[in-house]
Length: 431
Ligand code: PMP
Image (cartoon, rainbow, N blue to C red; front, side):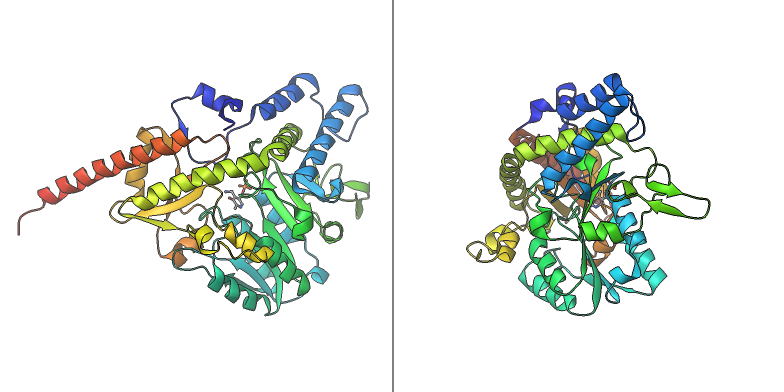
């Protein structure tokens, strides 16, 4: 759809890129903003008053405005820049003060990324909390039965709910607005990992009512090494900073320090100025185009998942048919969210008769870039009783032709692998 606005595809026309959940290609406005900063106003921010330093600070703070707009943050001060979702969740888990933890359990979903498991493990060990897991179906689905069980779990002395808005391993879209409402009623701190949602659907943190919402720039057409931690004002005020150093203080002695107000309290050290400016450009691009992008990706996802469903010997995971299951049942925000259950253009699957890595190696040779493995969700793979999946994921630049080329390449790959299997069988000694 926007393919010609991404220079990567002009330079690599032969490449079918279906790994946008791992990282996205960069939008031309992002590349230009980063380049202009380096060529025209390269200086650090918030420290000096000469002209290019002021210019750099202005660009950096304009990026904060654009990011606040993208997620409808009530104020710009609630947008903290850092290196990405991993740093955000580490900051939250390490900085919670005891009065922010009203309960004994940390509730996470079975499909969480390691970045949304490990920091909680460390916190639970440090404070003697327990981690409880919200289950999915054997196919990795989250539909009404799993939702109902989840709501019961929320009633059992939960202090923190940490979950993804969209699963990077399954593509499930979780009904976070409704879940955050339930969390608020129970005084549970909600931490939503929006890394896989931010480039695919409108995100409104104000109406969602989450306490924290985090994401990474490189999954939304911006550079690597930059990301965002949004928090409610009171949560940011109460949270202790993780990165201690230059510029995040108002006063320091050898034994004590007074921190700046958020967001600067969390931005110690020289920030990734170029990355933040690039992220600001990506936020502007998404704010303008997110509805069109969502529609485009939903139609490509249908083509992809129905194409895979039609082929024999393939087992799909995640809320593949949630759209169908919940059609006509949209009275509440909850069912409306579930109706969207799976439409961001990410499909995980395995083969009944072939190894994932054999298939991937053959697809790579055909210029198809996709991902196989556990997708940093090893506990989920154990729950599903599989070693990993093949994951196809799309972005706003993906075309119908990309999906057709992938499906054709997959057919050829499976035919080649079938032939190899036949060879191996024929080599077996006769009984
Ligand atoms: N959460 C999710 C859902 C992700 O997909 C990823 C990246 N794969 C992360 C967290 C971690 O993001 P980063 O490595 O950019 O910090």
